[in-house]
Image (cartoon, rainbow, N blue to C red):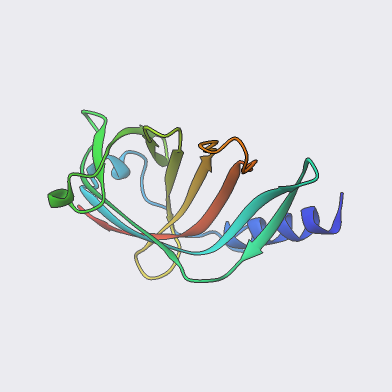
Length: 159
């Protein structure tokens, strides 16, 4: 395992709160289905860029990514990313056990998956991750590379 891979693994384990001596507070199974809106902040990310055909992960702690998810209806499997008035894209919602997943597919090919866990991060905010993948080859002369990013943070829930 390369040094970059080891660093990424350590950061992921730390952010997920893996600790053999402590148990984080967890919501009861099914409680995530009662959430109606989320305000999420992701201060740390791992971004992968390809260099000479080889993916290279980089850990970033720059400006946090902020995502709002509104009008969550777990029974219907729907929600809206962003403010309701903005007309932002619809997303698919799935609640499984102690996880709620939001899947957004953009017309240009971007896919985003936000997962909120039924585990408290800080205060009453829930641990969460957000993944984005994208590839836009609009200019064949530019030789763009795919973009893959994983964000780590927490979400404030409104029930």
